[in-house]
Each structure stands twice: as C-alpha cells, then as structure tokens.
Image (cartoon, rainbow, N blue to C red; front, side):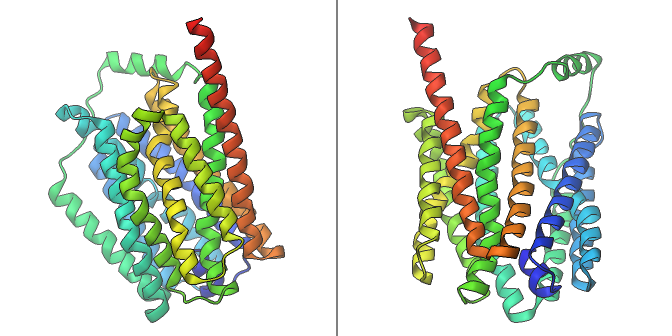
Length: 369
C-alpha cells in the first residue's frame, strides 16, 4: 500500500500515515463490533465471509480509483471490514480447539506459522506483479484470491455459532467489570514499542530500497519472504526454547536481535547484505509473535479474553503510531531516517522488558525468602 500510494497515486509520504491510521481505526472498531456479534451467537463463519468479501470490494476499488481521497474511503470502509477477518478466524480456531479437546496454544502456533508461510509467497507475488504488470493487475489477483477463500470457507468450514447460556453471560459480565493487572498494561507498552519498530520497517523498507537504494521493485517482496522463511521454524521452536530459558528471557534475546538488525540497516548498501541480515529480523519477529501474547496472558490467567484483546489493540496502535511517524520523518528527512525510528523504538521496548524481568525476578526471590 505504501508503494501504491506514493508511486501509483503520486501522493507525498506523509499521507501514508493518514491512510494507515484511518484504516486501522476502522478495523479496530469493526473487529470489536463483529466480535461482539460472534459472542452473542451470530455464526462466525458468516461474519468471516462478510469480512473477506470486504477485501474483494477493496481490491476491485483500488484497481479503479485515481485519487487519494478515494483510497482513504476504500481503506476505511472495505479494508476496515476486511481486517476483521483475522480476529474472526482466530476466534473460530479457538472454539474449534476447545470443542475438539485439542491444545489451543499449539493450534494457534500452527495457524500463526501458516500465516508466515504465506508471507513467503504473498509479498513476492505482489511486488513481482506490480513490477511486471502494474498495480491494477495486482489488485485483480488479490480479489481472485479472496474469492477463492470465500468459496473454500463456504464449502469446507463448519458453522461456528456460539450457544450462550445465562450463566455464561453472568460470568462474562463479571470478567468485563474487572480491570487488567498493571503488569499487563506495562507489557502492553512493550508490545506497542516493539510493533512500532516492526510496522515502521515494513512500511518504510520497500520505499527505502527502491527509491533511495535503487534496487528492483520486486526486491522488497523477496526480503519480506526471506524474513517469513526464517521466522516459521523459529516460531515453532520458540515454545520449546522458552521452557528452557523462560519466556521473558527469550523475548529479551529476540529484542536484542532486532536492535542488531536495525543498526545494520543503517550501515549496509548491498542487496546480498540485506538478504543475510533478515536472519536477525526473523529471530526477532518469530519469537515476538510466538510468545508475546502468551506472556500477557500469563499475567492475567483469569481474563485471557481481555488480555488477548489488549495485546491485539497494542499491536494495532503500534502500527498506527509507527506508520504515521514514519510518513512524517520520510517527508522531511528521507526513508533511511525513518528506519532510525525502528532502532529507537526497539531500544525502548528492550529497556522496558528488561526492567519487567528484573522486577519479576526480584519479587520471586522475595516471595521465596
């Protein structure tokens, strides 16, 4: 989208932030509304189909529009609806796991790794189609893929309505009335700054390597695909690693890898070097995504739903903040300066998480004493 807005519509980089904030806010509101309908017994499969159809409408609209205000309207209305598909499918997976007696954590990890697997193909396909066939054909391909998802979902997936009893309603009301522990809010800040760094990189990198470094338009897709290829096995192994060293310590290691990655981004100039350092980015994001939500949930075991929603919102707000500040920095100082934001934000996240780990260890020792 950043490449489409700048090169396809000819807008200034600062408008990237406006689009991203607007679409993200719309997505948060619509996700909450559709999630509430799902909790009240509306079939999750039907809601998911509606959300994916929003992607179809968005892709077809993007292929035709010529002005930024049109892209903004499409992003708010159709992409806001389309972004609700992810939390809806997560809810469907969780209910399937609970209904079938399977380990929901393991199933969620497998699902998240499959998303990373798609990132190997998706960005490469998108940037290659833009480079060779143009933006319109790229959006047609996206619409066709979304239509395939609709057909596959309609034919294969079972209905997923929720039978809500009066006792469940009372329990949910009680849970909703209790505030999350302070530790969850503190960790939410860690998640926020970590995602500011990641979202800024994803948005600024394609423009930096194509416009400032002069690399081919297809190269950003290759880099994103390489990162996904690295992070998939790391994501699947992170659960076993965390049992040996601890979840927070492993997260600290991943944040250290991210700091190294963002430092190297300021120094390297060759395509080969960009490819090699994706290993650090894969280590960071694979562990961060694999363990981040679990760490928050561990601090609120009686309020898993609220903690998970808080994690998702922290990620979304981090994306809005990162892309909006990136647009502002890029407008006046260039895309490479925007990548410095990644480094600064990641350093803040590392320090916050380190202070949390030290405080938790100190409290544990005092409790044992």
